[in-house]
Image 1 (cartoon, helix red, strand yellow):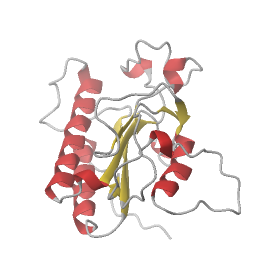
Image 2 (image 1 turned 90 degrees about the vertical axis):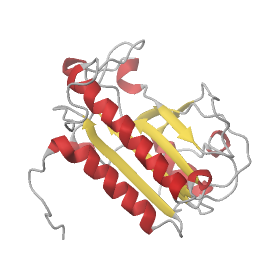
Image 3 (image 1 turned 180 degrees about the vertical axis):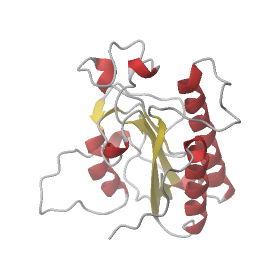
Length: 220
């Protein structure tokens, strides 16, 4: 049974609150394998940001919210370093679909946006950071989908996917760091979609061409 812990939270502070909770989770679980999934509410419409970021960007409310997510990601990476987890943690940053043009998003140079069948509605950033396994500044033009995350992360964690059902995704671990087991994973998802779909991830592109060395301590 689900328990309602709060109604109508102040959305101006929600990115900061998510960030604090994510860091607290990392600290609590730094001595054991962990998986942290952080699906940001922003920059989904209506966009909100805290006083520190509101009105500061060159792209209105959308830019303000995006810059606060950038800050949030930096704070989480600092927490990994402070807890000696930086080189043992795979960090994945992605979105679930293109931004909504009518609410201020830009998917250039791609055409279209959320709700369309154009590339701007489906092709999204997919950034993987894993020091010691994925060389900085590398990229790949291989096309993948976020459905590939389940079999890939299971493989990197040294486990096996369930065998009693059809798994739609494919193992892309050769592009994501190779063979050693991961202690944990951090999955950051900037959200241009509605809250009703917070548990769904759609198409993505993987730009990290990796060698087969290194070991992940956590995944976010």
